[in-house]
Length: 367
Image (cartoon, rainbow, N blue to C red; front, side, top):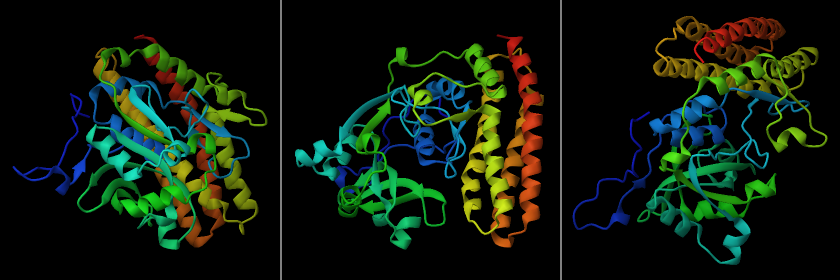
């Protein structure tokens, strides 16, 4: 992360030449979390700003799991004020929202909106049918797939928009799409959650000091305690939805273990694939904890968190190995791999409880 906010960074413009003959791109950093695109996009923008660190490290502590959800069994708990847990928006962003229905009613061109926003330093996020987006998994297979995309640059002369996303082999990298194809992907798309996914978001960092957080230990200690004790978090409308129940914190691991057990009981099913992203998310959760603890040490020099940093580094590596084990299971279908993964998950769950207790005690001494 940089000490100062990064201004919109444009390609080099030769004297006397038209700016639109060149790539115009806003800066993106390497995201700390990229298991899901909404995290990757948010972190790619926030990572450019030192002033965003207090917000990042005060959040992304709690995990939750929707009971019965086999597709997304583990997620970071960070819903927006409407209870939408897939939001890319952080409180420190300047934000504008335009609904697709408004764009269509007014006859606005997507390319004009994007180019105007980028030139104003705003990133543009919306949902598309990824069937039309080249070099994506759905695009390579011509599959209808409603997925978000964030545009961070364009070249008007070449009629291209630039974005980062998962390619057809699920690598996260930069790519481009021509505006005509992008508009087709935007218009020929059916939303799964119309209320949120029809929105087109224009956002950038808010540089007004009052919108940025001070860094304090007490909120972190409280969240760590909630996580350790699997305490139900009642901070958002998402916690009151009818017919939906959740597990929080360490107990969220139980749902992942249950999926592993279901695959073990019925090896013919292909639910094993649903384990890969959650295990990756858990790896990133621990990696982010390492960065959080390093940041806490920098802000509170009286604290020595070397042991805790080492413990969470070991945990991150353990979840990475578990993810790779599941990949091996997908090739070999060796049920012994699954049983080993179940045993390891239970071991981690027990060990992490004690690790969290030690960490909470260490932080409480300095709070």
